[in-house]
Length: 188
Image 1 (cartoon, rainbow, N blue to C red):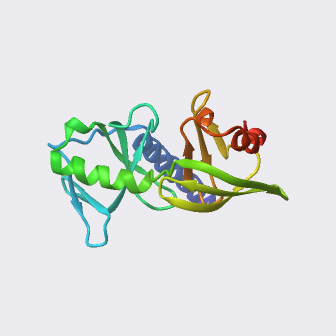
Image 2 (tube, rainbow, N blue to C red):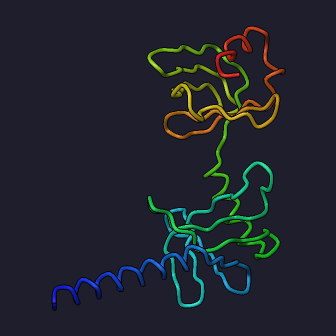
């Protein structure tokens, strides 16, 4: 009888804990200049204080990175099981100093070199080996074939993700030479 009672108490506790976690996940907390204080850390990251809560390091992520670059920024914990702390609805909701800090983090997070020339793309054993020039200089990277490694943002704009999750952009495939476009045929 005690064993059954213990089991029921554990089950009730687990259910209660799941309900609490679900409520936390579904709750949207909007951050603004009145309730959130961002500061640079000594290591180049951002910390966040919301009332009594302190997060020594936070990550800034655009919820709609290609459509709303200055709106709907998700502030998250930086760990593998990233948890959303809150949302900044618009950059105008925070101080100019905070905007500067957030933009620094976004620039780092969304660093996306633009491919200006394609020297070669070699397809081997399910991987594509790229040799390109970018607006930040020459680059070689490897991409896994298939899946979502190439995202079509429009009819002529593509985003390429390598195996290390680095992003590269071709803003207009029509600006490439015929020879370069032929190399891309496999991905278009």
